Figure: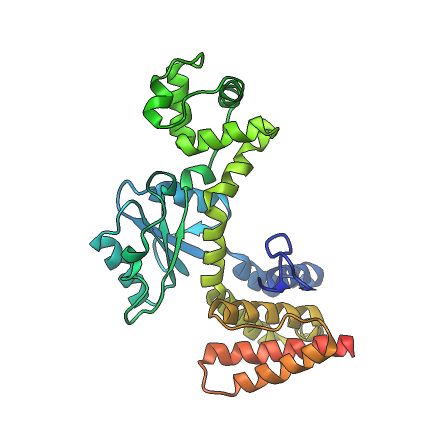
Length: 336
């Protein structure tokens, strides 16, 4: 797991906590009262754009709704990252959609929806995604329906009745057709809202003592949706870092005439927040960053990434290496 955490609630085991650059800049904009700085902060804080595509009937709209609910900006045009939703079988149009995003240099994740009905996408069906000129493409499985659950009092009451008086849950038809005190139309509505897996998981959770009002959270946990979010965050790391670099460049242009901006750019929180964004980029590319928080590790990390930034790497990774080295030296100064 990454150890340079912007949000310790999402990254367990972190040893070095630094603020998110968006938060650092927003706080500075509020403190300094400069309208130009506030405009830079507002542009940086705008949600990254996610395109959600897929064939009719695969659950594209449900997944898009879940992403929007979680604060992602779903947009068809000029996305920072793309999601191709598939279900049951991988079709030629799915492969073409993935290739189209790759050709446009947009990072893409394939999401196999309705995993409760069809199971994970067979590994052999993914060979077309995982080879060729575009290299590997990320693949995740999800039950999008369970990521957007909203249960009213009637639904909660129905689930509590099912927990108290077990129903047949071997199949959807068995659940609807078997004799039970819960009316058939109510059972039909539960299936539309939760699917059979959602009903079964809810009943099991209630029998285990769960609070009925906690069911939406519990269902989201089993939906696989958070894995999709983590994958999107990793794929969007370069776009997020580019935004930060653009904001820094704009602020540097104003720093010559404003000591407050110059001090902000040199502040430890700023340098370390930029470092964390750079770490996200290189880790998303499969590189490891030593997470140790002692002076020797910080110095060793600074030297290694300085050398990396001067090697045969892309401009993006050259900038990342320099920012990781710079932040590591700040951490070294704190520890020595």
